[in-house]
Amino acid sequence: MKITSAKFVKGVVSADDSLSDGIPQIAFIGRSNVGKSSVINSLTHQSGLARTSSFPGRTQQLNLFLINNSVYFVDLPGYGFAKASKEVRERILKLISWYLFDSGYKQKKIVFIMDANTGPSHNDMEILRGLMEDGKHIIIVANKVDRLKKSEYKRRMQSIEDISEICKVIPYSSNKKIGISELTNEILK
Ligand code: GTP
Ligand code: MG
View 1 (cartoon, rainbow, N blue to C red):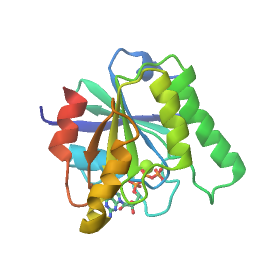
View 2: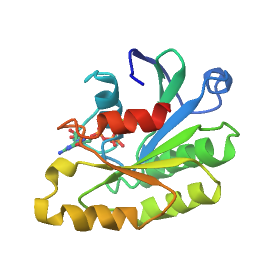
View 3: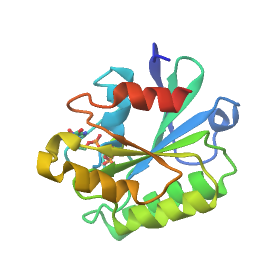
View 4: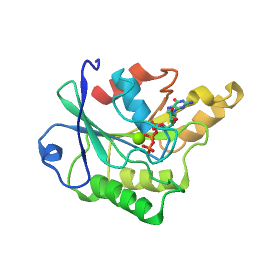
């Protein structure tokens, strides 16, 4: 399947009609600056669709994008942004946790993005465990593989694959456009 259209719908921070309109939701989650918004842009072939930044903490709402007029991509704010104030970090964690675990909104799939160079952080593992316990359908994206040394590639990817046998792991680079068709198929199938 291909992504032929993508448009920004709205940013939400609490219950919203769009989230209960029956259109399936695919959530993009991961720690701050890992490349969630960049992954969405690369998948949709629109470099300016989701706002990205080299400074962590760019995305602060749940940003909804309508894809192929049939599914929402939900770009989440990132967690673990050490430089943000305690208040901002708590607000963001609350929003993520509410949307994923308490809101009652169903995500058809979760695209869990990690940095291929560092592997899962403590926060990643905590959130992943919660999602797995909840029986969510998770696809793990190991982003920024373009930065990975050839000699490190196998070991790094293996350490991410070891997290769970039930999650598919896709090596990815938004910058170098690696893994786009594999992830698109996995999301839309
Ligand atoms: P928050 O919204 O702050 O949580 O960040 P985010 O996860 O949405 O990250 P964003 O897409 O804004 O990207 C963060 C930084 O990582 C930017 O400087 C991107 O250019 C860079 N980046 C994203 N994907 C890749 C990649 O595949 N390779 C490399 N080398 N850099 C990337
Ligand atoms: Mg973002």
